[in-house]
Image (cartoon, rainbow, N blue to C red; front, side):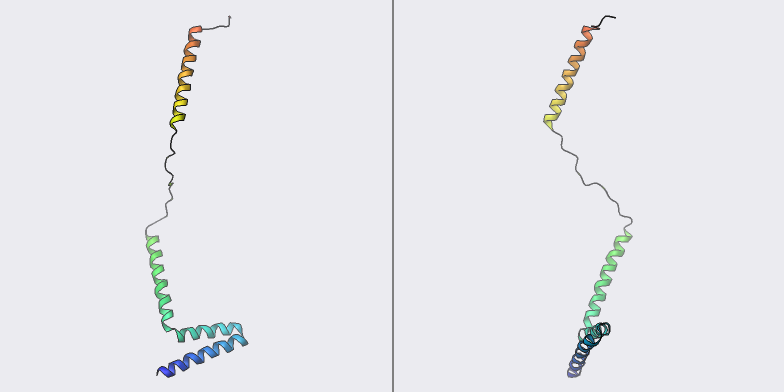
Length: 108
């Protein structure tokens, strides 16, 4: 029985090679037949993998629409910039106070 199976495999291989030389389209079909005969478990394995990935995709679709959100952390703030802004603000307040004390310098 094993010998008959090996002969079938060898015949399919020889047929695929011959078909490839004669006609490439029919050769591809013959090669696919050879693969099915020589490796019968390959088709079941591919089907199992395909079903696994289909299940994964179904689970993802079941979760609902995809939501996108920013992953950026808030920007770090510079302590030096805060000090400069505070000093400038204080200086501006002092100047404003001085100008108020001076009043209108241009006579009307």
